[in-house]
Length: 225
Image (cartoon, rainbow, N blue to C red; front, side, top):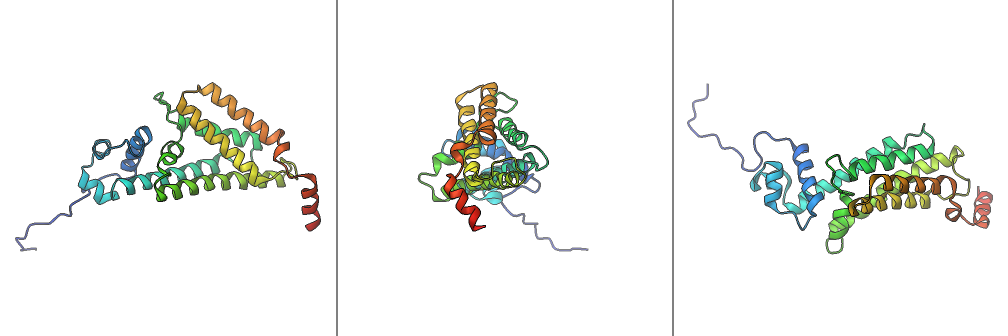
């Protein structure tokens, strides 16, 4: 049985019980609406229910907290894309699932025109912040690689022309995603954005002449094989 009369010393910082995932989601939502520069520590404290020492103890300063929310958003987006790009689905259907899923994020049920968290916030800060710029660049490459992997599979199954270039098509697919994000934030309707996505899928899957390698390059590649 303990006999010490010394008072228990509790570590300062995070509260005894808190939900890290929920706190990060709440902080992300504040950054998403107000941008990095426009978000104050008071706003973050109010949104997460954590005072400043608790926030610092759990996540570091505002910059570190933002980078964590950005990295988590990018990874969540990648996982959602992988699920939507089910290899058992026809390619057009799989691509439309990606864009429909993105629109659910860009235009939430509360009617806000949020757009993409990464594009809407990181693109602004990337000019002067090397860490944010690196995170943004990696996020873009992550989505490109996810699309490219699916396009290579589709090409092997005959869903894309043999001379199509999956890496270039992936950048076009990502560009459509980013355009939807910007137009969503600018106030385009869901119907208009869906129509844009549908046209983009038709371009990629059916009318990608401009995205194919010249015939001479394709022939050279076949000879090399």
